[in-house]
Image (tube, rainbow, N blue to C red):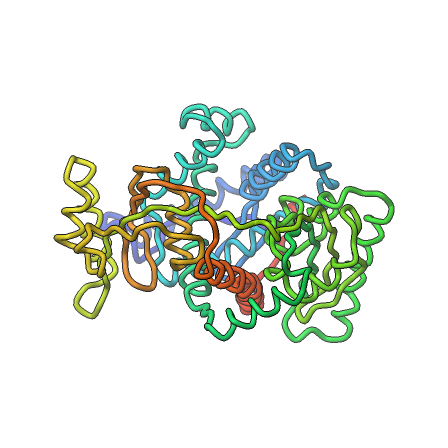
Length: 453
C-alpha cells in the first residue's frame, strides 16, 4: 500500500524515550503506530482538514485559522465604516499579505527582545473601551458577538503593541529634525498657500519589490491600472484600496487623517493641488511604487491658531552601563505601585527621577504638540487627566507619566516651530517606515501553500 506523501506519522524519538523502553520494544511500538495509521487511511482520506498551513514565513507558519480570524475582523471593520466588501478571495489575499508582513515584524521584535507586559495589555484594552465609550465587559461582549474569540482579540492587540514598540525603537527614534529644516519649512509655508491648507486624502499604494526588473515594474503597473479601471467604473475607493493597496492602512480603506500640505510628500501635494474634493488622480509613479490619490476634503488653516496643551509631569530612570533596561523598568513599576497605593508622585519624582525636573516634582509645565519626543507624546496623549502611565520607553530611558490637565491655547512663535518640527517628523516617519518595511519583506523567506484538496 502506498502511503500518501502528506501523511505524517509521529512517534517517540529514540534518544528522548523513557529508559524503560528497550530498543526492541521501541521498534515494536513504532510498527504498532505505523499499522494503526494504515488502518485509519480510508477515514483520513475522507476527512476535511480543520486547519492547515497557508504560508511559511522564515521559520514560522500562518494557519488557515489565523487567516480566517483576521478576515472576519477585517470584514467587520469595513462594514462598520460602511465600506463595500471586496470579493472574498481578493480580500483574503490582501489579509494574508498583511499577516505575512505582521509576522515578519513580530519575528524581528522577538529577535531583539521586545515584549508586552500584562499591565500594558490591560491598559491598551481599557483605552480601546474608553475611546468607544464602552466598559471593559461591554467591549468584550461586542468582540465575541462579532465572531472573534477574546483570546484572538487579545493576541492581536498584543501583536499591534509589539510592532509599535519595534517601529519606535528601530525607525522612529532615529529620525532627527534640524533647525535648518524647521527654518526652511516655515519659509516655504509662508510662500506656498497649499502648505497652509489641510487635506484629508485616501490613497492606493502598489509597492515595487527591491531592485525591480523592467518586467516586474510592468506587472505592478498593470495592477495599478486594474485598480484605476475599477475606480473609473464607479467602484468605491475604499473598497478598491482594500482590494489592491499594499499600504498599512489598506484594510481600513486607505484613508489618511487630516494632514497639512507640509506633511504630505511633494508628489502627493503637487498631484492634489488642482483637485476638488471627491476627485482623484491618475497613476503616480514614486521611487518605491505606484500611487492613486483621492482628495476627500480640504480646509484652510490660516486661522488655525489654537492648539491643545497638556500639563504633565514625569519620573525618568535613565539607562546606562550600570542600569539595564529591565532594571530601570522594574524600578519604575515599583515606584508606580507605591504611587497607586497613596504615595505622592511629586515626592517620588524628587527622590528617584534622573531628569532636571525632579526638583519640581517632575513637573514639565504646559506642553504643546511637538515639544516632546514622539514616544513620550503618544503615551501622554493616551492618558486622561490624573491617570498614570505604565513605564514608557524613549531614547532617554524609562518614564512614568501623569497628565494633570489640558487646555486650548494660541500658537506662539515657539509653538509654530514645534508644529513645524512635528510636521517634518511625520513626513519623514511615513517614508522611513515604508522603506523599513520594504527591506524587512525583501530579506524574508515566504512560501505560499494552496488549500489541501
